[in-house]
Length: 142
Image 1: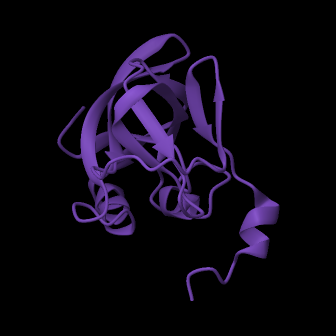
Image 2: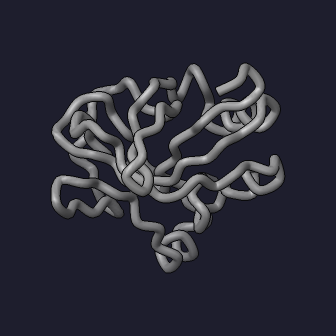
């Protein structure tokens, strides 16, 4: 990948159905496909109306892979609160049988037990966007 382009693996509000996906669309990000992390070494929690991935655990993470330019990557860093709220790590992601190296935002705090909105199937965790929940809790962070 060139210095001006980045692969980013997203798993929450930045996904196509997510509330922050407009950042990727506006930046002209290229959707590379849905995929999972190669390694089962993560845990996903969801203490709010968005998920965290923690760099400890026994699960793969399902998400979406995007190719973004430098400006869009900076916008993502801003919205994700990098490096104070989320940090970045390189992960191996498998999309359509092809392995890619991508950046993934993760949280360094110890995982909570809160896993509402997180589904686990075949040792793969995924955050499930719940429109009803988001509508009913719209004023949660007032």
